[in-house]
Image 1 (cartoon, helix red, strand yellow):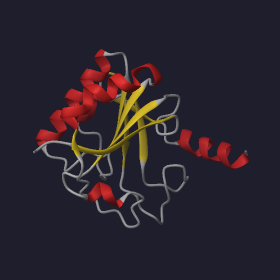
Image 2 (cartoon, one colour; image 1 turned 90 degrees about the vertical axis):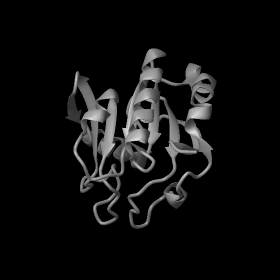
Image 3 (tube, helix red, strand yellow; image 1 turned 60 degrees about the vertical axis):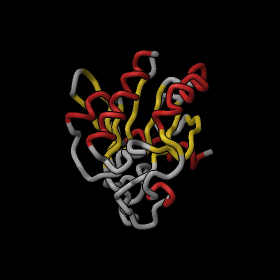
Length: 165
């Protein structure tokens, strides 16, 4: 079956600052980052088709969440980008914000403008994760229409707070 496949779902307060996110991990990642923290996501069409279960997943966590966070873009095809856009619009219709974690080294593309938050950039071990001041990755919030602001520094502060505890 073509389209997006997901490997797991969880609820997290960490992926998107200030939000309780339904995190949906998507398989088919084409980035192949060195020392990937979740190599199973590189398997193509691994696990269940998202479109079969998406509305049930959202219904299950709706009362606990403020955001839906898609971790990955699948293979990044036009069909999958359209499916992600439709999923984001559905979540918005229920009053939820949306986030896309893209592992690609790219700018914000027009099809991504449906998301409230966007994380861009491959994981480069020498640069560190999003919480590192030397990271190549960037995290953006949509301020209005298609204008986004880089808020990556929020993750440095979160990391410092975690270490201090």
